[in-house]
Amino acid sequence: MAYKILVVDDEKSIVRLITFNLEKEGFITLQAGNGEEALRLINDQNPDLMLLDLMLPVLDGLEVCRRIRQEGHPVAVIMLTAKDQEIDRVLGLELGADDYIIKPFSPRELVARVRAVLRRTSARNNSMHEKYPLPGEKISIDGLVIDSNKYEVKVNDKPVEVTPKEFELLYFLARNAGRVMTRENLLNNIWDYAFDGDTRIVDVHVSHLREKIEANPKNPVYIKTVRGVGYKFKGD
Image: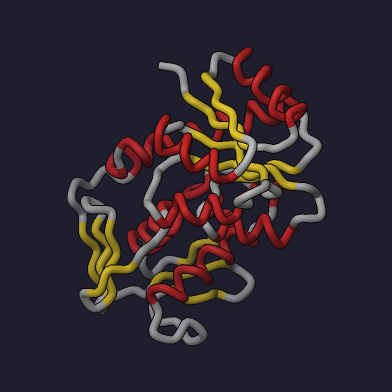
């Protein structure tokens, strides 16, 4: 079955270019010219992936991303950004986007990024156990509970809302408790993409997780920083 891609951009020439190249590769496409229309199509058509421009009328791309992740929608998100939108790219990734492409981009790069993100997210959306083959595993460490069967996180019995990518990162670190994980290792295992060597995406997600699970994010108990290397989850 062909994947369904939602293209969200208010520049019609870009929408036509993207749509043409995706359909040529066998994808089904949907189009939206603003954030409100994008949200409606996500709920009505349930696309597999959304190409989301940040600068949109009515609702901007960051707000669209925030709302779909808050609602728990599993659609994969690739942001379309300009070169001078670095801060917005970081915010978008923190809100749960899976990747970003900087304009202008080549059609070949676009299709390659779409295929790569779909490969990464299809297993996640179908079942966490395809990636982590331990059915019903529940990790419990000092009040923090990570339930891979229910896809839930709790701290001292209180539910914590995390994005799909935050869950994968937390789960991977917890399953490797006591071991130092480099940023590159985390990129390869969680994002399956190098982001052109930019490891800040890891730091952003770790920071966001600390805000959610640590009593004092500046003095973390669960996710420790190993200076100059990466991160280590609290061991026994």
